[in-house]
Amino acid sequence: MRLTCPLCGERDRREFYYYGAEDYLRRPAEGAPLAEWDNYLHLRDNPAGVTKDLWYHEAGCAQWLVVTRNTVTHEISGVELVAERKA
Amino acid sequence: MPELIAKSALEGRSLTLGGVTLAEVEVGPITSVALFPGGAKLAAKGLKTLGLAMPAPNTFVEKKGMRIVWTGREQAFLIGVAPPAIEGVAVTDQTDGWTVLSLAGAASVEVLARLVPVDLRLPVCPVGTALRTQVNHMNAVILRTGDHAFEILVFRSMARTAWHELETTVSMVAARAGLKI
Image 1 (cartoon, rainbow over the protein chains, first blue to last red):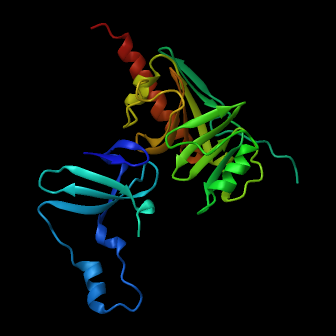
Image 2 (image 1 turned 180 degrees about the horizontal axis):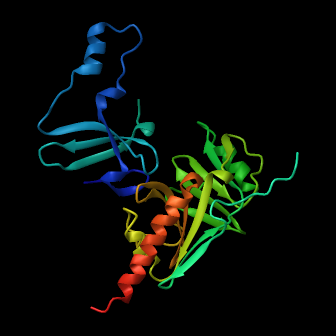
Image 3 (image 1 turned 90 degrees about the horizontal axis):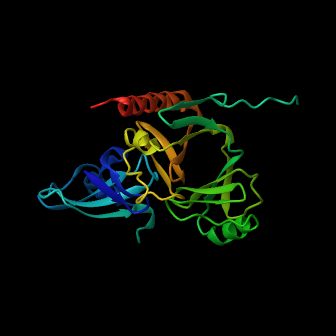
């Protein structure tokens, strides 16, 4: 498996660290209802198809990345920097 | 304060085998220059006093014995010169934190091909390329300094490990070249 880091270019899987679903970027605001926190921490979709998750380019530029990939075909359709995402 | 004698991690050792020379090199001061948010303009102004600019990703620029090396998003290493006063950036001295190894010779690409998970052949990795990647399991910054020459920056604490990895690989590549098949 190879990921194309927006900064470093195409790199081997071993340079990256997998964190989890992209949902971790959407942290509930302070004082949000418990259900929202429960959702944020524990409830994940498990799609057969396109999913987004967080990877860290540990052995490269040390940036967090959002990777869009397909769990069925294993196709990687997008890699973007968390730091340069529009809020 | 007494004058202290600076010692490099590997005492400048070198090794030549199979036409490849591995050596520890002295590069002078190493300074990390990391942009504060919105600091790009001020940084450009400060670096201009040296005739340098923030380098593009995966590149380094060499000028009058000074180097500026891309080491990450909005971050660079200024090597070989005492840093000027620069605003808009976090400037930190890294000189003692790194060991620099040079690897030169026709087979140097083959040596690194055994250790580095990035294609370092000349057409895709021209002179002036700076990569943050790994040498085996060790984080490193690799500079393409010549058609058959590289410089490898590793954490000083890992200097002997890096030397061991490279020395072993240089000798394996040399042994392989000596085989008659």
